Figure 1: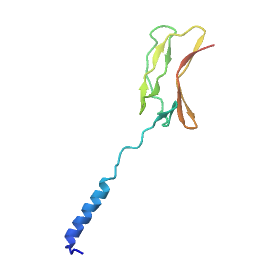
Figure 2 (figure 1 turned 90 degrees about the vertical axis):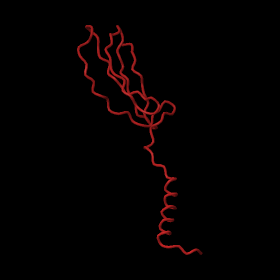
Figure 3 (figure 1 turned 90 degrees about the horizontal axis):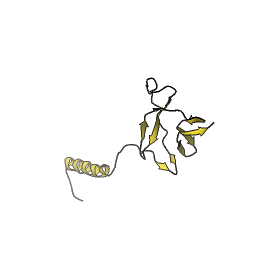
Figure 4 (figure 1 turned 180 degrees about the vertical axis):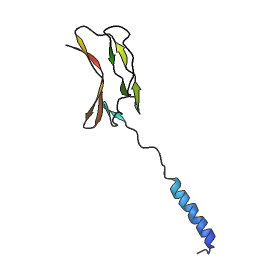
Length: 111
């Protein structure tokens, strides 16, 4: 066995510890993912949108919604829309299921 001064042993121990710790990777928390139409991370609460009067009489506001881009949510702003005779607008929405969240597109539905 080789005799070493205490300071050399401390230095060697610090070096060995730094090698062991350098293999440890610390990163951001895992992001949600999308599998078979389901996102594993809940959408944020809707944003508050401020809008003025409609551009034309009878138009109505279609609220914005969160869109999943594959690794995060992005806000899609709302917009004014002309009505369709005989139809009603069904808003975009996120539905919670057993494995996560599924997006249902907004659409026109016959009355």
